Length: 134
Image (cartoon, one colour):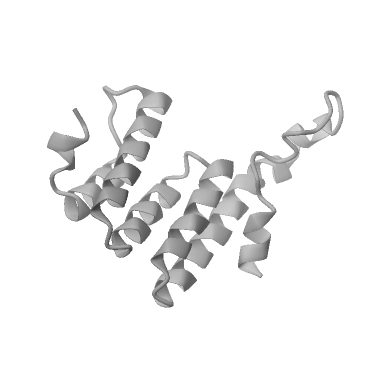
């Protein structure tokens, strides 16, 4: 059921709505809750997949949620953990590159990654500062 629920989330709530339609939603809490709920579903699904030794499915769940909630630090952390569980170093490095680029586009390269993301990268991919960050 979580997989089915996550498959319904394809971007911001009603992003394809006709101009002038459902504009009132931007003043409702549901618009703000949507990305949080999608992230919660993805995190729960990822945990289930990791418990079942299906790390690629866990990564897919997190990547689906990142379309809706691209700046959720919890998803960034889980993406790194799930990608590490695949045992594919190139995939982990690609995920790190993606998060660094996303962080740079959000706050500029001078600000860097959130501290918890940096700490997890230091643990999972110690060489990231030399090979990826520069």
